[in-house]
Length: 156
Image (cartoon, rainbow, N blue to C red):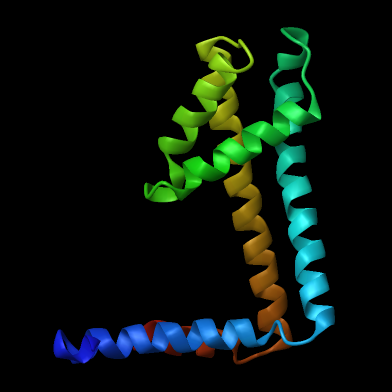
């Protein structure tokens, strides 16, 4: 169906779907479903924890009482902010977090924007650092990983 529009576009789309199917094949077996579920819960708890730590980093706990539930709510709202198609969630994340902190929890605009900027910055630094370390470890384990990544990028 896509080849009627453009063969090149159809080939790229087919390649993307093949990669998705290949990724879903890794979920075969009950053990993999359980591990995926457990790791998803751990990731969500860590995201909420990073939101919680942000309160203390800026001393927001001295302004008003803060709780882990507040952090969980902000984490959920931030997920919506990241889904809005802006580069790296910039702008949408900050606006939603600022608005939530002001309207739901009664913090000032300045501290709310500071919180949004700080948590967004820290999450990206950690994301880049962990990604780089993971890549270096995988590259060391599989010497051809760099060549494989280059080949995949060249094909796209």
